[in-house]
Image 1: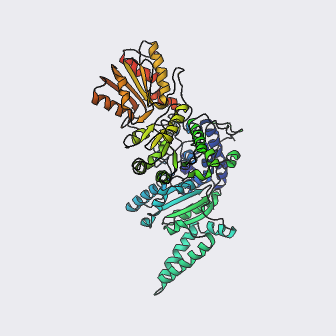
Image 2: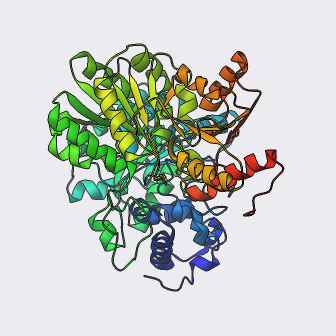
Length: 628
């Protein structure tokens, strides 16, 4: 690792990849892997999946003409090589840093990034739309969707495939990067050689010519062509087995060795010239080229910075995800009704131990959040207590199910929302700042937002045994924040911190209470007495909390969530309608998508840290924070 990048540093566009001699491509792949490993070891990011897609990406840019031929990357976990081959080598060291390159596809970075990527199973639908527009406009360009095998657990893939029959005579190419799940049964050497042969451009030209000639034979040509096609299909099915993709109207090619550049280019050329929706199935090895990632691809999927020679440090359990997993595990030992549901995120959500110990009560539904919620409803209707553990950003997929199958049904169900609030380096598509506003419009639910592990445990136990409505428990990524020595966890709907008789009130919830507590002490040192109202139950807000506003001159509400429709707006609306305080100020994220950066950098930028809170309040008193 850490070599000279003689080829890569000269590549400014995909045309430079085309200009390389075929004999240079293995060196290019080696240089790309070196850059990816060295950069991710410094910045963190998605490692194993990107290392597995190096040859595929080089082949794509050898064969197709981006951006006229549009490549749509599913999720974007495999997009690092693409960035390096499209003129971003010099910037790549800024990967996932504030104001640097995103870890996902971003159109504002390059014309070669067609859409924003970050969530799974959407690439085929998008590529189909592009292909349809090409057909309407008479363009011969290709639309290419690149997705991993995990995306096939998402239902949207099949909704898209079911519509491919409407796109005959279009250049829609689906690249299925199979690096783990068995899509087709293993085949022998003959079948593998035939798979390569029937994926070439020459094969498709010959096949098309033969079909045209046979079809033109007078009287029985069309029937003969159909009979030959059926016989050929029967023989192919004998060798490969029946194929779902072809049953849905997509021509299947493969499987192809995803690390054999020659075979990849031949297969892509064949798909490019086919003129009908086609799926190219390739096999790759996750973590290719870095032995530690090859041996443990799951552990090296998304990683924090690490030392390349040593590999990953042993994961600490000092974070909200692991703590919640422990709480759930411990309660499940006492209560056999408790079961856990995940949407392909058992490791990230701290459920590994639960999945191993309570296999019969652990359900991984794949990338199918929409399915998970009514699945939980079914479990609850038959006496179980389901806990659906999901990242905030992925929960956005199932708003309808939250409304219809969670809230309306009033079953005994819990949704544990991990990564609530800013997540940082993954940026716009992963920040969990919208869930509170989303839940704010859902009737008949209870939403907790704990700031500390102890509160998380209390809220979870309360959700299990004391709530009469469906419950949401939302918590942030990472460790618990600063907690003042004089604060006591109560488990109440809200807590008051500071002087209860203060004439100014700061209201907040969740992780940034720690910042508010620090601000309270700094302001007191400057002669400004302010009390903090810490909401623990954010939906619904306890009406008794408003009694704490008696004689308060101004209320400041700081929220690690979006302003529009958020908890702060609800709080302010109640104050206004009931004339409880003469002035109210809300500081939250505006109507925007928050870009990547470290959590503390983003909180500071949007005045949601101690310094920002102090600045907002000091300006009202005609004072300036000395730290500015």
